[in-house]
Structures are given as structure tokens and as C-alpha cells.
Length: 116
Image (cartoon, rainbow, N blue to C red; front, side):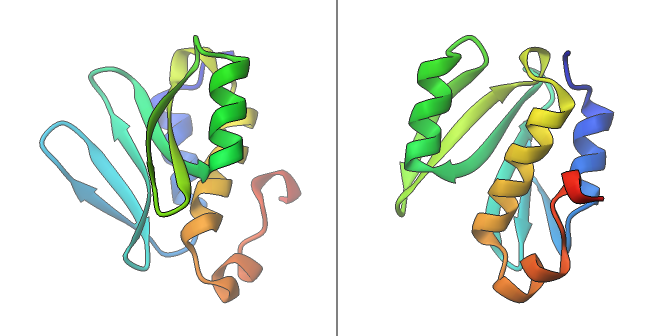
């Protein structure tokens, strides 16, 4: 059930126009200048952009896997513990985070991972 770091990296690599940035203790992920995710190797956690309603649903349903990170610009960011989520579910959340930041033409050219 847990998702490995390599599996997470593969998910990120499957998306279009992803840029990686290095912070002190994390890697950030964006698409055309808009951030959609973060990875903290020390804690094996991922921060992902979601809608506010999705953020609240995830955190309330499984607080052992998801934590509220912050809200910004009408979006809710969620911390995901890789040890508690299977790769298929994480792939959907990663795609959704990317989709919320990517321009429409890029989304249209990049099908969701479950359609590959």
C-alpha cells in the first residue's frame, strides 16, 4: 500500500512542463511558473494543491494520512504521508494538483494516468 519515493518521482515525470525547484529541505514542483506540489524527503511527505472541498474531505476522512497544510487563493494544500497512501490514489491527487495549475491546452494534451 505505501507509495515509494521512486513511484512519486515517476508520477511527477509523467506530467507535462513540470519544473523542479530546490529549497532547503524540500523540492517544489510547478507547471509554467505555478506551484502545485512539494516533497520533503526527511518526513517522506508530499504537499499538494487541491480544491478547498477536497482538502477538507481528505483530512476529515483519513487524518492519519492527510493533514491540512494551508489555504491560499481559494485552494487548500494537503500534506500526504507516502507511507499511508497507495500509488494509484496518490497518482490521482498529483494529477489533480498539476491540473489545477496547468494551462488548459497542456491539460488537454496530458491525459490522466488512469487513461494510459
